[in-house]
Image 1: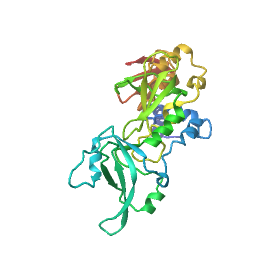
Image 2 (image 1 turned 30 degrees about the horizontal axis):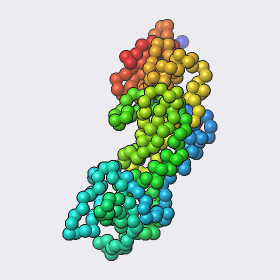
Image 3 (image 1 turned 180 degrees about the vertical axis):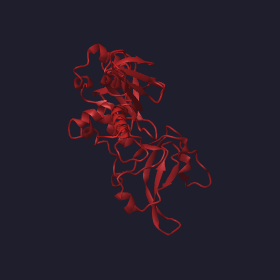
Length: 321
């Protein structure tokens, strides 16, 4: 026969087990950000039609450079890396928005006596002032590199390549981070069809500005910023497959009604939304609180900008957005 002490301990353990099990389903859980593109790619082999299409957006190899190749200047800081050959009359340095025209190269010795390459440019003006950019590496090293990066510039041949590839195309846009005509950020739509009108050089971080109109012909011109292919360390990861789709994203979610999809397009949430619909509308949260009471299970989603959503039994019941 068990002693009274052992019986008491046994009963206490039996009472504690449900509490331990319940604790497994409460508390704060960090979640990674999952995008529509990642969901779509996960259904195949991870390489989408958009990935294959964008893989062509590669700059010319150095070995193919010809005199006359143009580079767009993204910042007045370009004067920090350029030198002038004219010691008697210092020319005006290029500024943001100007073009540098490649003329050729020459070899010079660095402090260690190694032969390194300098690029020679003119500014495209009537004065044709000459400027040099010292690469710091040899001809052989330049030829072996996949990407030649000249700070504060964008290769205009690459801009033209992207322009030729997507201008006139109708695509579905996946981001609401639009720019207006003045270049100011504005809240746009997502998952709507747009028509690409032009591609122009933009910034050091996002070299392409994609100008578009909505495909229905309504509204003004807008634009989004886009980076190039992976490999250029200056560019932030905002490539073509992240912001454009060839197919209507709504087709991936046939269970979502047209009325609810319209709210998603406009980045709005509404009572009765499922968790999938809410995440499509405003993205995934930075953390989730889970719990339950006697009648239902709940989740509280928190976002970095202070927005929160509360779900009961999988449906949105309250939010501050």
